[in-house]
Image (cartoon, rainbow, N blue to C red; front, side, top):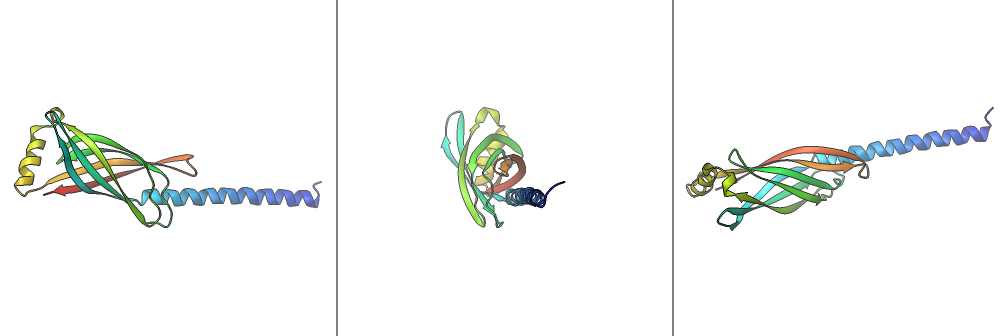
Length: 164
């Protein structure tokens, strides 16, 4: 037979386990919500280097966290399209976005002329100068690890910037 003190210890242990599980669930939910609620926008696109065989394109991305909770540390991988044509791939290392805050990060991709069609070059040159504009689109995935880095999550994103 279990004594009164033994039952009390078991009850305390059960409450402790329930509390830990509840706290873990709360942390997971808050961090997941913050990562999934991120508003990602492409704020600026600029050609920073023009070479004989390639050029560098600088991209400024803005991450806004509208939630009441800090987003977990994030990384991202993305593809860049000019018009509908793929022109490059990039990655972002650790990004931190506090609650109700935004942060900007700059990244650069190298566009190899031999890997894109003449139509992309014409769209950049003639579209921009003719006043028609060119759309630059980023399609990617944000990666985060919630619950103190134990559980991975991935959130897709897409954003477009028009150059006139």
